[in-house]
View 1: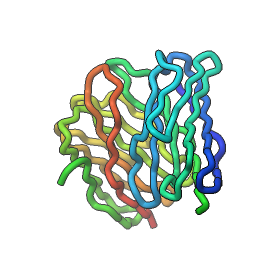
View 2: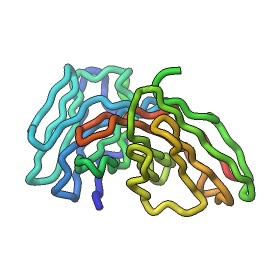
View 3: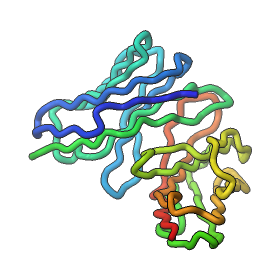
View 4: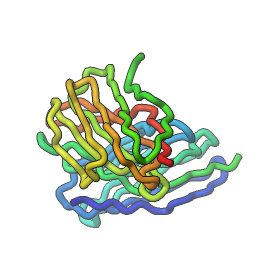
Length: 114
Length: 114
């Protein structure tokens, strides 16, 4: 089955700096890579996702890059703000008619210092 | 209620008790999931249901028994649990079919096994 490794486990940055979180996956068949944000005491929510036919995707201050050859993908947050403080989870899956389950990484706790 | 709801939000039970967790989604989705969230494994998939059929059981002990009577409701029946089963149990749902679909999470049930 799929195995997803996520680093770092904790990350502290100053407000305005950039933050990068990295994930590697083991199953070369995986073709869908979402990122979820979980604020303290709240439910995880999707913030961005990327499919294997795309190398990079941006949404305002958030971007995700994918390197299929190396089997790793990264989340980039620019101009960080205190409200970006949360736990971020990467995930990977092979999306077809039969399988829709995500394998999540272990999470990164991001703290943005004002 | 909108989105994905879960009841109860908090549950304390003894090891000999039998209890059930309930999840309901109001999004018209066809796939539903149970996850266990704990400090050791932040987002661990337990079960997946697609169109009321169980399509994945991630080696979950038999003391956890899922039930999906229809596409909108998902239950997790608990019996003879162990203290290490204490965790946040999250339900999620997504659209069915062979597409890349966002998973929407419920608020979770915080379970404590004494």
